[in-house]
Image (cartoon, rainbow, N blue to C red; front, side, top):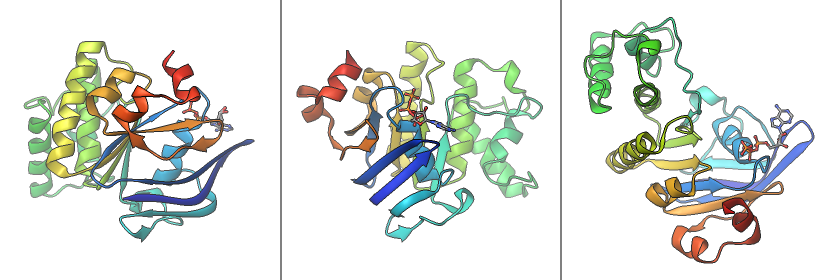
Length: 230
Ligand SMILES: Nc1ncnc2c1ncn2[C@@H]1O[C@H](COP(=O)(O)OP(=O)(O)OP(=O)(O)O)[C@@H](O)[C@H]1O
């Protein structure tokens, strides 16, 4: 469970307030208009933005003052952030050790994760030699190897076509269930949310609304969500 207790997060002149709880083991889609604060929320949870007020707890642990590296949270961005000069295995290995001094056992874990993501035998390639979907899988592999209970996804598959995105959503759904992850996903594609999310939280006008059951919310969307969905 993730709790934001009277939290304010800020970037420049923008402030986002959140007094909400995200359920453990559940996938919540974060939806709302451009500039509403969706990325701000994820960056605050990951620790890249300090909370100006309030407390953030994950599974009962107060993480408000923790730096990103020690928070029980992994964040995956849209552009994947694969390093072009490194092999896919090295890029994925960074999830285990930033200095890449992996033990034999850790190399085995990298290979096993690559295989699990459908990238068996591709570890020696550079990112430029991968398709968009394969690169997305590698980035997801690195995030998962960090073995954190919370996965934050900021439009992770926006650059992919509809079929590939559907594949990635299916993969994510399986991984979430296998690992009992708590997931927050920002997506501009309502059909993504329909595929994967249990709950939806609307972020608009500098405020995070409490998550609600997806079906209930989509059946009767509030104004901000209706505008966003068009
Ligand atoms: N580094 C920054 N410095 C100052 N203001 C920022 C910075 N990053 C974002 N903002 C502002 O904070 C507000 C919220 O931005 P945020 O990226 O969280 O919105 P978003 O809902 O994720 O939007 P989008 O859907 O367009 O990605 C915006 O008004 C934006 O201009």
